[in-house]
Image: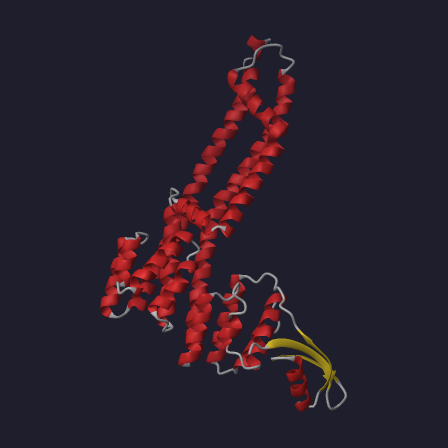
Amino acid sequence: MEHALFEWVGKDRNGEVARGQTRAPDAAQVKALLHRQGIAPSRIQEKGPQRLGAIKGKEVAEFTRQLATLFKAGVPVIQAFGIAAHGHANPNMREMLGNIRVDVETGSSMSAAFRKYPKCFDTLYCNVIFAGEVAGILDELLDRLATHMEKTQALQSKMRSAFLYPCSILIVALGVLSVMMVWVIPSFKTVFSSFGSDLPTTTLWVIAVSDFFIRNGLFVLAMGCVAIYSVAWFCRSNANFRAVMDGLMLRLPIFGSLLQESCTARWTRTLSTMLQAGVPMVESLDCVGGACGNQVYALRTVKIKQHVSSGMSLSEAMAQSRIFAPMVVQMCAVGEDSGSLDHMLSKVADYFETQVDHQVAGLSSLIEPIVIVVLGILIGSIVVAMYLPIFSMGKII
């Protein structure tokens, strides 16, 4: 029978007010339990499902590392949750850990308690916890899980920085161009109107673009925001549309190869962690695709799982998916033959994480001069176009 969470208020044997939360099938069971503890309840109310606020993946990774350390030190489960939650900066995190602690106190397994918060603890996380509870090596698997999450967070941070830098430069460039088009060029246009002669073609083009910006700038900006929001909404709500967009992202020049290496690193790292936890191959593949953050890899992983379920080796199924480099397939084949697939997958993940590091560093050094040259050409062209009539003022006048 499903147990609900009840909040209660009452008085203990000393007449002092006591409060707490208890998980039980119904309020009558809570009342009986409290009476056995010497508490006379004055109010028992079922606590309905609550939406937690934002909890970052980084905070979950830090909690996992804390929990692994506490378990290795021999701290009991309930006390470990109390220590991890105490003084946490995020009140949403404190509330969630408090609810999980209550669940565990009332007899729920850790994996079952974690599964109630799928936005924070994904299938991979819960499966590893379940495997640790069954095998009695929860501290060891928590340590591996924490390492996995820390490496994943580091990789995501590097990918964000790789895309954030060119995007920020592009925004600044658009801001500078907008200021010139809306305020600077109209000032020149006012001056040129008194010349009483034809302006150079280049100058007329720039003035025409400025006029368009002034008349339709807000409309274009609004339509751009609507288009971005629509694409983001369709990506979240439609798996097929997201697969198309993710496929296009993988084909981008420069950034496409960076995304492929990042997805490969996360795919192999996740599968390695699952196999090290003792989770069977087919069940492990259920979690791997979604961990990549790319719908193309998720869909191809479903096919890989189907091939493996029918008796095909993992390396052969990966080769047929055509999303992995030949080196990755060869390393997996060697791991299968030697019986050390989890170790080999971990090495592949290390290699591609290093490759992402190098590519991000190279990309940053490559983008900067390109952006400077492009901005110089755009702004320089506008400046020259505006000063051409002044240079030829003698002929115009």
